[in-house]
Image (tube, rainbow, N blue to C red):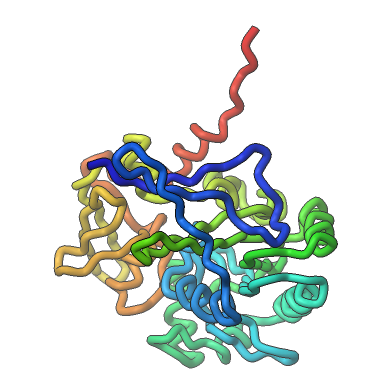
Length: 327
């Protein structure tokens, strides 16, 4: 029996206007069975979805992020999730059911605070859920960046805004900011439920920062990092990786070596009964809760020891290459 889930996009993609989401159906014995959109309660986005994102930032946002703190207290409120990216930029992540201009202003105020925050401030706030305090922060940050000395914070601060709906005028304001390379990303999120009470979360990305806004280096990987979201399942579908491939994560400076196996679903089988849904999630489990950019950690020894990050770049290049017009 064929059972799969499909998401149907109507062109052009709908704006976030309060309706939220696009139709999702399950294909069941040749029939389309719709998933109903869940009417969000007051805590679905600000609590439930926030906690899901916190459990695996890479799986949710499509990039490896270093978690600093959930509900981080700042001078004029609490940031839902405070993080750092691999280049040392502060990342402010806010979750809202609906976004109006007041909530957008709050996000920008948090970004203003983040723009002047130092590494010492991050250290004081640090609480990853398994480790906390300044000493643990500097140890874990150096592991995440794979550096012998702590990497400093660099501008600009980024804002990731997760929401079901954005008011029309506020949407125009976000468009204005994004067009001027302000590093603000909108992640429309819709929750669906079928008649068996199974739930699906559909995550999109409407405004992602341009490479020019984010990149301080010249590497190819740096220049495409903020573009198309890629999962290991995508690499399997593109035949860049196969189910059953062995992957290895080595840390020569500390004499550590880990192995895992890619499953048919694109997950990581760690060989001891544990599995992880993303490269960074797998690395974090093996490092006892310490964050690590898994795409730049895992290599495939039977495929010329290539990094997963390199295969992700090849995938992005292939699907983003312009298609020539006939004639």
